[in-house]
Amino acid sequence: MSNKAELEEVGLDEPEVQETEAQSETKKKQAKKKEKKVKITLPRDAKKGDLFVAVNGETILIKRGVEVEIEEKFIEAIRNSEAAEQLAYDKREEMKSI
Image (cartoon, rainbow, N blue to C red; front, side, top):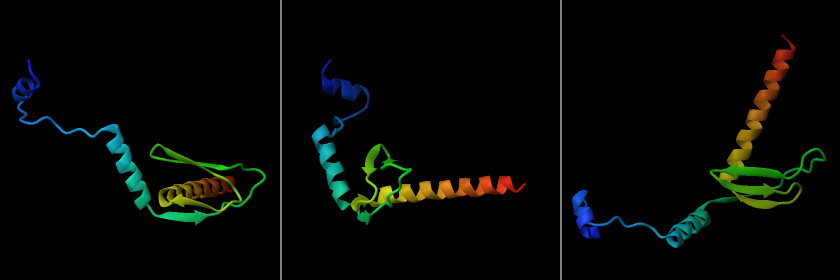
């Protein structure tokens, strides 16, 4: 059976246009260029190493004590992580006083 006959059989007139992998990568690169970047310097800490951050499958490793420019989505993830750590610390302290 031909492709056209198969398409008519399932009720489609035209085959779906599918992006090639190269087109998909190009769109991703263009989207990255549009994302706002922020400069950040994480404080050096003898107890902590470099900071690994992952957002939607995209990962970065931020070196402490060095100014780096990263996308805002990673800043948001860092802030969320710090807020969660603070909340956990506060709860532990609260539980000690009970």
